[in-house]
Length: 265
Image 1 (tube, one colour):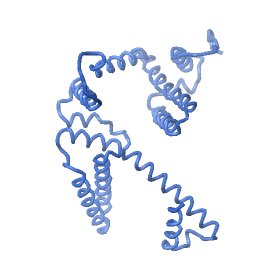
Image 2: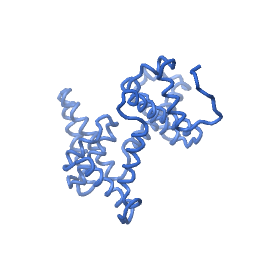
Image 3: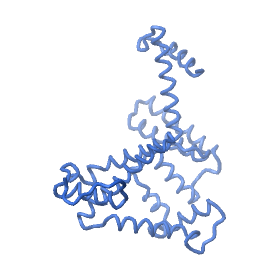
């Protein structure tokens, strides 16, 4: 046991910071001690999605636990920099507090807003000013390439729209989607792998553009469609098993009939 460590009935944030420091310190955990930002970066992503899962399930107990796991990742990364004498948890908290105060002048200052739209406009304007983003291109460059592709494309498109580079209505976005699908068909028919890769990306990008116009989150829409496919395929597989049908040896026409049955369930 680490010298001087005391067990408590209830712990707080300061205890978490201290525990992580102990784990990485002399006499602590060998695994924790050798971790770097790079070796644990995927854990940060995983814990974030587990928080999202808890929210989607409306499971408060699980959400409390997963938020703790996510907080651990922040503290762990902070501890690595503390050991390098670069910054620590205090600097992180100071930075985010100052950012929140600065970007909410309607709460902590004298700015008046008429609603949510004004709040978002002020937020973007302040963000661009503080980050010295003088052009839309610079604002786009600030969107992390590591974001999920659908989310990143949505953010990029929204910034372009604010600069006036956008369709007047959804029909323009739909026409562009149909145009890109036609180009994808042509690339596939020509067996041009490079062009097919390029055109498929354009189709997806155009589909995101449509989702933005109809105010549908592309990530959530695709997740819902994937869930729907999974559910229906599961029913198809069950029907095939009950009727002694070998799916691999059955025609697509017959499988489509099972699919139509599944859609009615």
